Amino acid sequence: MRTKVIAGNWKMNTNPEDATELVKKIVSSASVQLAPSLVRVVVCPPYLSLANALIAAGGTSVSIGAQNCHHEEKGAYTGEVSPVVLAGMGLGYVIVGHSERRRYQLESNEIIGRKAARAHECGLTPIICVGETLDEREDDITTDVIGTQIRLITASAGEDVVKASVIAYEPVWAIGTGRAATPLQAQDAHAFIRSELHIFGAQDVSILYGGSVTDENASLLFSCPDIDGALVGGASLNADSFCSIVGVANEAAR
Ligand code: PGA
Image (tube, rainbow, N blue to C red; front, side, top):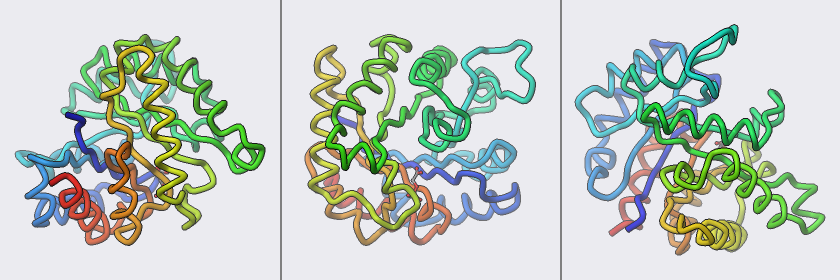
């Protein structure tokens, strides 16, 4: 059975004190406490808030993830963060290939695959992001773009790494715009991704939808057969909204 996952991507928001408060609120919510058997809950604060988030989540079922990592364990990479250190701190997950990193740090599919492989080797579960831009959707090349991303990342990371990862489908035009993909658009993309994963036996990987998910649109999205949860940005910064999304996922998982 595919694992349901609700992951919060806090991006460059929250200082360590905010992170403590937010995680405390999340772990004490009834829907999050109910989730473990049905839905895995992950929060991904900025690096400098990870230690506080780990302490606040200690002993609960909420996992902490990072938003990025380097593709090597150590070395002369000024300013970078090693996945082995993240794993050693007690993190469970790391997001790789978010569209904001593809855009601002010019990360390629090849590098994203290497990050996923190294993260996996260190004991982290990679959350690998793919998705098309608005121009690409309007040019009707969505599946070409996503298919190429998956093939190049798989070639770089290795099939076994992708099999042990979580995929997040995040159409770039839906991120932070308040304009989520419709359930039909999302389901079509997820079914396509699953068919690409099926080629090498990775069809049971969890595929999350990301892009303007709220507690209002989550229910229809989660009722789609190939949507296994969400990667939530803006709405994950508000404990009530994030926990309501977890609650919707619990209902959908029953
Ligand atoms: P959003 O961000 O929910 O604010 O659209 C999602 C993401 O970037 O992962």
